[in-house]
Image (cartoon, rainbow, N blue to C red; front, top):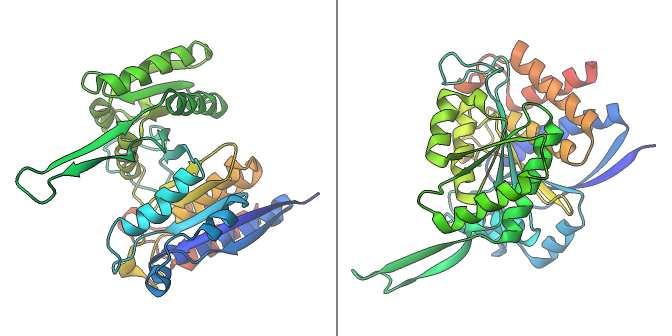
Amino acid sequence: MSKTYNIAVIPGDGTGPEVVAEGIKVLKVAAQKCDLTFNFTDYRLGGEHYKATGEILPDRTVQALEKADAIFLGAIGHPEVKPGILEKGILLKLRFHLDQYINLRPVKLYEGVETPIKNKGPADIDFVVVRENTEGLYAGAGGSLKYGTPDEVAVQESINTRKGVERCIRFAFDYCRKRDKRKKLTLCGKTNVLTYAFDLWERTFNEVAAEYPDIETDYAHVDAICMWMVKNPEWFDVIVTDNMFGDIITDLGAMVQGGMGIAAGGNINPEKVSMFEPIGGSAPKYTGKGIINPIAAISAAQLMMETLGETRAASLIESGVIKALRDDIEDVGAGKMGYSTSGVGDLIAAHIDSI
């Protein structure tokens, strides 16, 4: 019996609509293979909508998004809108309002994609970062005094609650167990300097670890994590960390796996609606040229299927991506794909259809 999912689509700015279109194309082919039905509903949020209406994210839209099974996001960022307005008004507002407390970032090098790390290949680069997504420095606590004067003071506070830290850590342990690879979870922090926040993180991590005797655990400072991600990425299976450190190391992870054009992520609330997106920005200078790489958006669709429990659909999408990268696309890291944006989507869709 066919299963139906209501997918809210936010194509967004710049090249966002182009890559989202390819993600939807691939999802439709996977749906046919897996007896699934997708109802896609577009929400025209972003820079053009803001310029035309003055609206960023109206409450009626938030209420509609709450009822979706998942959200598929293209990109947010417009060259004619001051940085921060759209990002805070759409991305952060959705993450906080929908309590998407996990940012999930797979870092996986595929065959046919070059990494800048010498003598490392797909067998060495296959790990996942679980980033706390609603607290830390991004919670927005703080302020300034004597703004614009020589005596100005700016304070930005990192908010870490036991509830927020523990649910993130538990998710990471559960994910590590379900992933069932090395079964190793690494806590990334800075206990030698950020003694209050990461004392809470480390104590919680160790307490929860006692409930997962099958999972190996270790700890590393964030600076060491950055070094080892470059020198020995094969050491990692799953990494769990706070909001700011997660933001930083996942961008490093994107480069390690071959670039932003490959990297996908999910903003997860396991109990409610989650949002999936390519990691790269809106790339406005490439809008309409048909040359932007859509694989990150297609991989975000794969991650959406995994999160919804549609593992066969996710596997089909990944198989299509793997074959295209290995056998067809010339040099994705250098931006020389040999195919247009829609051509890559057609290629991956055809591979899925042939399985």
